[in-house]
Image 1: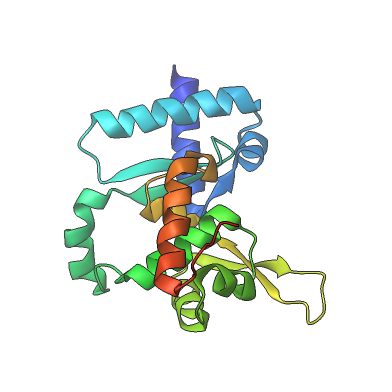
Image 2: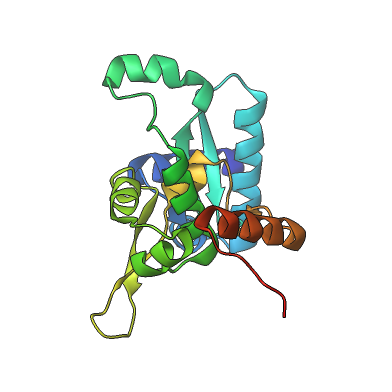
Length: 193
């Protein structure tokens, strides 16, 4: 059991010092332990943080492929008094719409976003990049090499999910309703022949 205590402490130290997400491979290498054992240790550490009145938690991303030490959201009010940062970014309907397009279609270019939205999205894309909810993930192999955008770890943290697989599925019937509403708003009339 002492060995586990030392490994728990080692995991905490690594995650604290890294400050960003650490891969399972990196933890396994640092602890000189196989991945499954590291996953189990991190899981036990997560449970320990949940059971105890602690101000931190271990968040996992990509179904246990990366881990990060984070502040529990319920202590955010106390934290902002110290670091004097704004509580949260204001996500307008336009930003949420643009963010959802990126989340479900990624990697996606700004032009593709604009095609879906039907309006210019430069401001929305820039704001989402500024808020670190989306980021450049590459360039499309096409004329002009437009930037491809995808979501970030901050996106996952903000929405309380560990991977993109946790996003809800879109019901095809609702999708048809959305399409019909959008066509009506745009003034498109479908005529059956």
